[in-house]
Length: 240
Image 1 (tube, rainbow, N blue to C red):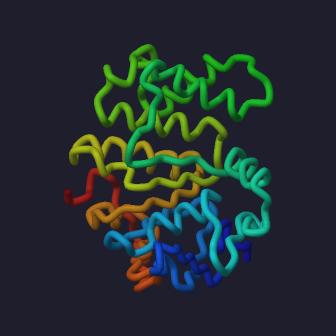
Image 2: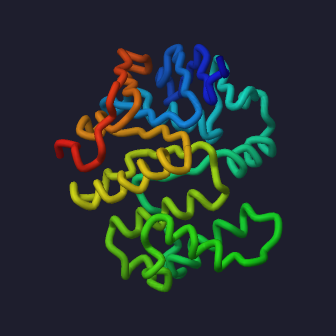
């Protein structure tokens, strides 16, 4: 049996807020297989985003280990973590964080300059990524000329610039209406099913949960319980 792609081993994360210690995670044990679609579900303060940030190498645990593809990233230097994020992680956030002075294709092209070893054919590659999320025809539009859903799809294309095996999504539909959110989820689902991208998606929206392979419900920094969806629903079947 193959080892999981992602392993969180007795992970604790404490933050000091003045004289108060906030226990964001209290001993998290979680394994994610390659190609799996996982939803982390729970109320605000349950530890969802903290878990995502630790897997993505944006933060370090107070205790425990994060092992990705057999490598203990908790032992990495800052330089190694930067390289890890460049090689293995794509981030999609609730806020699109596009550069407003750049067009859609230029936003993706800029991300490619940070990951490519050579700068040849960047425009062609950026357009191909936009085409993957159904936005090749909007390549020359600025963010202000795009809808919220279109901006989020540009953000997904940008996240795919390094061809990451892992896509980490933090409330990717949080700023979108139901119909637009479904379009964004459809792109993420297709990446998972057709490209084999491992997806860990954080949300408080219970309507999204049935599309995942597994739903990990967090409460007070711990796993409350895990649900396995024997037949994950398509995006069209979700009850919004």
